Structure formats: structure tokens, C-alpha cells
Image 1: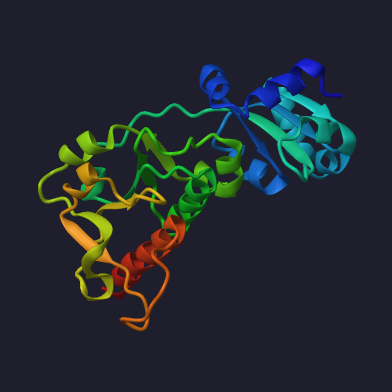
Image 2: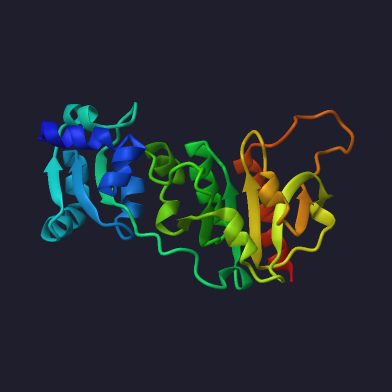
Length: 260
């Protein structure tokens, strides 16, 4: 049985204030929890009997490490869950310390930077895209959605276990890059992405859902890209969803790299 105090704690983690204060976050569902267990310290886990029987080895290992584990009914899990349709397991994890972007990483790898992406679902989807295309580091401006928001966590589908997310003053970080580092941004007046040379390292900046890349960050982009619509000149939507645009851009970068 989950105590009232524990339910109160779990519910409090819907709010950023308490997530920051307690350095904890919630994840739900067997696929997500399984992916996060190797990467984050689990401090509490509540699961239905079917899960505890199926994952008896994990259940025992967590208990041996001092994690509080509770077997619950579907009704009890419903009371604690932050989801409309609770699944078979709920876990509370400790947040991972952010040690900052590794020095020189953009000279060795392709990285993503998010400038004011505010929708938690978009952030989570972008992290899934980064994971799919082997991008290990994503840096976020301070006004980007919180990685540990329950909606973000669920939307990552476990990608946050493999992708390192760093919150930092984006303008200062980009200014500090080596002058030869390619800094890509997507703009309506940019160069057709499919006819532009793309490197296998550097930074791809994606902007806010409504405003795009902010002027201060746009000035630092030394490679301006445009995702052309089809056919050229046809009346079309004003813009693409930021996660969709990220997927298109990352796919083209990786396609070029694989064809070299």
C-alpha cells in the first residue's frame, strides 16, 4: 500500500518548484522505467503484482540497494499516478547531476541546442530524435521546458537515459565555441538544406515553437539552413513543428555522414 505521505510526495513532483527542491522526478510504465533504471538512482517503486512477478530479479535487486518497493493494486496505483491511464509500474528517481557540456565536444560530435523550446512534449520528442540519430548531448537555454517535467519524461520514452541534457546560458556558450565550429540554425531565409554542405560535427540550433530562434542566437549561427517545402512556390503551412523540423534536419545530417 502507498502511504498518503508518499502519494503527496509523488503528486508534488508535478510542480517544478518541488522537483528542483527535492531533486526527484517521476516515471511511469514498464518500458520507460526499465530504460531509466540503469541510468538513474531509483528511490521508490510501486508496481502491480504482474510486474513484480515478471521482473522479480529487478524487484529484489532494488530492494537490496535500499530502494523502497511496494506492491500495489491497480486502484492504489491510480491514486498515485500522474497519468490519465496509469500503467503497471511507477517509479521515483533521483535527478542526474548536470556537469555541463564536455569541452570541445562540438569539434568531435554533432550536438543539438534548444533555444526556448517550451512545450514539454516537444522537448521529450526532440530527445527521442536525438537518441535515434546518435546525438549524445543536447544543450538547452534556461527558458527551455524542464527535462524532469512528467510530460517530458513520458515523451522521451527512455531516451533521457542515453542523451545528456544540459541547461546553460546558450548565447554565452555559443560565443565561447571555437571560431571554426559550425553553428547551424533553421531560418525561412536560409540556404536550401539539401544543396548545402553539412559537416559531421558542430551544433544544430532549434528555436521556440512560435518565435523560432531568438535574434541574439541567430546572430551566432554561421550556417543558415532552410527546409524547403514541396513543390516550390506552393501555398503551405507557415512553419513546421520544432520536433518535426529537428527530425528532418538530423536525418539529412546522418544521411550525408553515412554516404561519405
